[in-house]
Image (cartoon, rainbow, N blue to C red; front, side, top):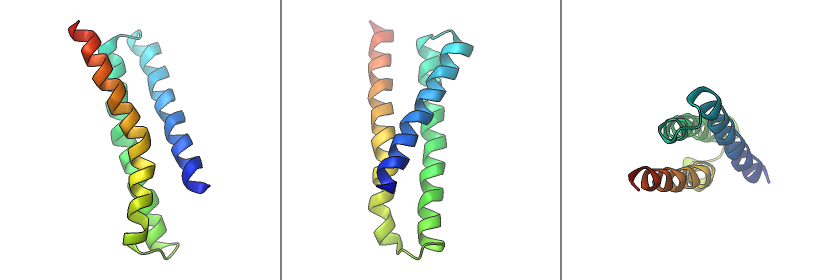
Length: 93
């Protein structure tokens, strides 16, 4: 359940990044792409920190935490990559 909540938080953070891009960048495609890239870097750091806490504080082995890390980072980042891909296609058209 904790993993699902963290993934949901990832989507909320991504939405916040998109919201900031819409306000500051006027909703332009390059601003949305930049915001999504920024989210992915930020989210990677959060996911690594979560894994580090799981290994050092909670006592899990790195091999146990790695699949959780992949889920926590991969689901929101995969969706973000799909959006970047579609936005780039829209820019080229």
